[in-house]
Picture 1 (cartoon, rainbow over the protein chains, first blue to last red):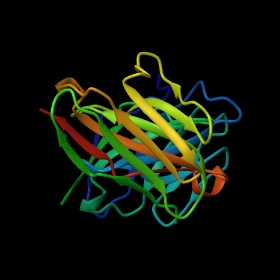
Picture 2 (cartoon, helix red, strand yellow):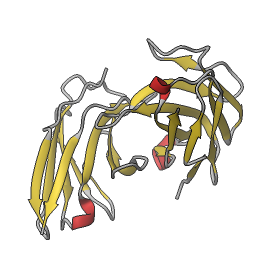
Picture 3 (spheres, rainbow over the protein chains, first blue to last red):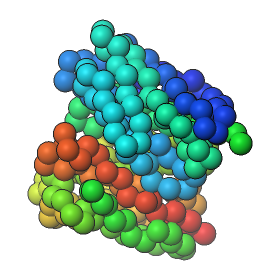
Length: 107
Length: 117
């Protein structure tokens, strides 16, 4: 079973930063935090992943708390094309998806 | 970047027939591939994990005789849905993990929509 907890849905205005929280309080030392998103009827798209340090790439930033029990995905300037279901997953040998957060970017 | 190709993207088959779905890693070697299914408005459910050259490991509740998985090379895994029935209609998605997961993580295919009539 999935071990992460995310809000069911969130809204964000276009051009603003979207901050998506995730709780992973049972994460073990060798498990990474992965973020993927899925746009309707497509395969999940990789966004970012991290172990304990904050990470940034061209898509997003990942902020992981010092105790590693939660993290936040930040989309710095959300666009309408960022509307999707976002999944936060803790994993090492395989990825088990939870229900994710349905993020809607509003014009 | 890492690319996983899944084929076909959609298929319609008659009840009782078998359907094969292919998953290929195009620019990297994948020691491990995963198969998921997704019903409408639900999340992805992991069905099985396949390692190149060995038998697949199925998640609890997934019938291994119905969903045959073959992972004959480091770039190809196949899922065969045998004796398909309408309740097998779903979106099937594969994922591949590179030899160096720190660089590629897990890459997903674009999915196969199976409709059994």
